[in-house]
Amino acid sequence: MLKKLKINFRHTLSQKYFFIAALTASLIAVAAFAVLSLLITEDSRKNTDDFAKKTFFRKYESVEHEFRNIEDYQYLLRALIQKDGLKNYKDYSSVLNDLNKKRNLLPYSWYYYENSTTGTSDTNNPLAEVFKNKENGNKSIVIQNNGPGHFRDLLVTRKDSMYWVSYDSLMLKDKSRLFYGSTVSLDDLHQYFINVDKSSNTYAYVFTREGICITHPEKKYIGKSIFDFTDIKAKDTLCSTTTAGYTKGTALSEYLGVEVTRFIKPLKTDNFEGYTVVNHVNFIIDENINKIKAYTVYIFLAALFLIVTVFILFQRSAHIAYREKEKIQSEKNLLLVENEKMHKAEVINQLQQLKNNINPHFLFNSLNSLYMLIGINKDNAQKFTMNLSKIYRYLIVPPKENIVSVAQEISFIQKYMDLLKSRFDEELRFSLVINEESSLEKKIPYLSLQIVTENAIKHNIATIDQPLEISIMVEKDGITVKNTWQPRTETVQGEKFGINYLNQVYEYFRNNSLHISLEGEYFVCFLPLLK
Image (cartoon, rainbow, N blue to C red; front, side, top):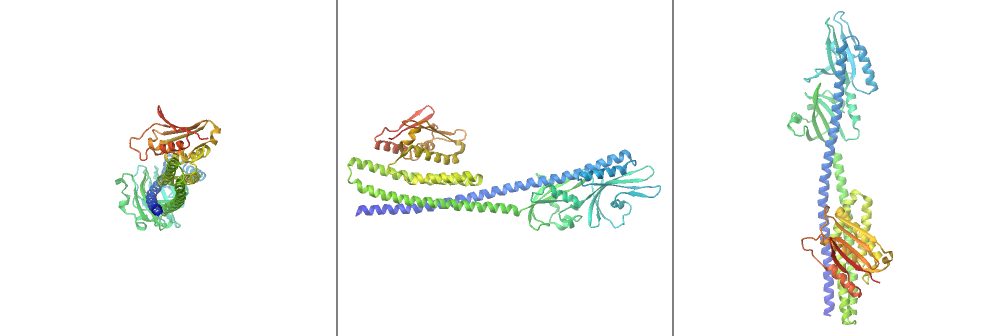
């Protein structure tokens, strides 16, 4: 009666241990995934911020490039006019315009000639009449410029459209005067900037040093002061005070009505002084981060389900093992003292082996490796999951005789090493050589290869600079397991348990015990095969 009460009491402790272990594992998993989620979110936000900066620079460079193209065109036009005077200016203007159309360039060349002798004028562009009659209804805004180009610039409004007129003049000896220059439609200019970079989630506009907007996706803002329709302040243009050469901040888009990250950088050429504004939409950044958070939750739920499943299987296996233990305990009274002692040691070792193999630490490391693989390579993640399932199926249901075929052990150790290599990567090197195919049908103690390889990993240093090499060679009479001898300096818990277990198994089958030796830089373990 006392013996029966003792058994039930131990069984109760086993159930209590199971629930405590399951709760502890769940709490650890929750904490681990919470930290991982935070780190991934921060890393994603940083990457998205870097992407926004790259997009800003790309957009800015395209704007600056086109402004310099317009300026180079002005220099070319000046060189031609000043070289020939009035001889060929009409032809120059016509030829340049034809070239611009073929090359899809924005500037349109024009001229305006005032003959002081006859009082007549000649022009090829209606906008040029702004030099003849300042009160003709054309609205013009002077763009101040002190650059070395010495061109003069106007913003001219005509028929609800605005044009950027850049011009110079040539005074002749008879007091006649030739105005020449180029005209750019601001609508066409902004459309060009849009077509340069259609894939990015940004839009850009340019304003002068005085704050006059000369490009914008919303046509009504062109020619207006940016201080009237945006929340840009004068201090936002003080880019020289920043180490990056530009200012950055969060603002509400006057065009889209959403939150944007706003970059402002000076735009200065020989003939223009102003600023480029690039707005990057923020809600796309938030959407990406929310997706990452959702994926992290899905992975956490899957991992938690796997942990609970493994612990349930562990409980069932422990219950089956306990029932087998009771049965063996009742039969032990009928055996001889020597057999009773031998069987008792076998049962204790088998139960201890089962508990050690269901190792939560190994499971957590495997789940962390699985989590990283899901984001990098789904095919490898699926293979990893199948290997983990097969390994735990093999561990949970040990054979009754504690011996298995060499082929089974080889198949198991290959899956086991695949999981370890996912954790250690270049820190671990593994090789398998089968010199005798017939040996695969012979027997070997259950988990003997796993015990020897785990012993090598537990007692030796493994780094990228000093990787741990493990090789398994299947011979006619046994299996040789070699590993590089790189012993740890600290004491390892559970030392010699695996070796003692193997010695007991070989002693039980009255076979030659395993042979362990240190050969140069290698630790060698020879496992004899059982018939």
